[in-house]
Length: 282
Image (cartoon, rainbow, N blue to C red; front, side, top):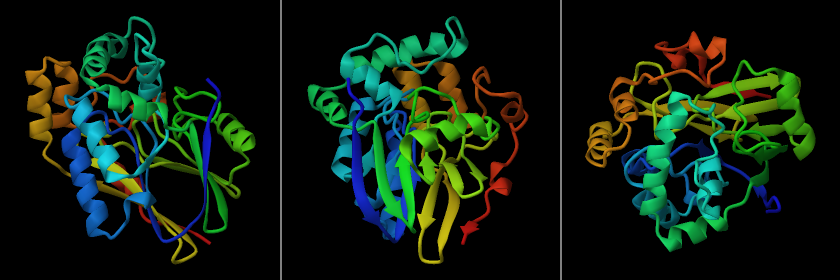
């Protein structure tokens, strides 16, 4: 399938960035309430993909997202679901714990989703671009060249550079890896706002998102929220989804760190908020 980009033109004000809803309806509802409280309209809310994932309410989550009207690109999960693929396409190593768990939650999601939801996924773009604060932004899922590529803060800039070159962008907004981070080299900026459907391996149950603002040059604010994670946990157990992922919702710790580079492994159980004060870029 040919790659699809939606160009949104100029944007201004506050823009809310998030990713990885992961079929977690309780987290999505809380984020929508946050956007409304902050006065951020749905057309200024952007998801990096993987609206469907580990949790128990894939159909309800997609329908609520559609009703809300926020923007999203396609994640690897949606890409696989809309083509009827037999696995999630997350690029887990064969035989790993994540690979084993995915056989349960992906098959469950595939069985739960309506034709309407699948058709909506087929309309999602691979990339989204816009101009903001005199910078060219491109939103990707993993990287520009590979939807399932795991890009972390510790990933070499040489690897990140290829996405800037391919998209002719000043700022890349990406998801997929499950951890929030910010990286900058000269005038180029990589933003991962984190995910809302699972914790960030801090030993804390909160979800992550980010807000960019052009009212004072250009600022990035990483923020977190707590939601009804107990209900999300109980629904997963009721539907016999992986208990390990259900437990993560309550402990804030990942079951395993198979996908993580050494630097990110060392961050397990640490408060990431200390790394994410407001970042002002003149």
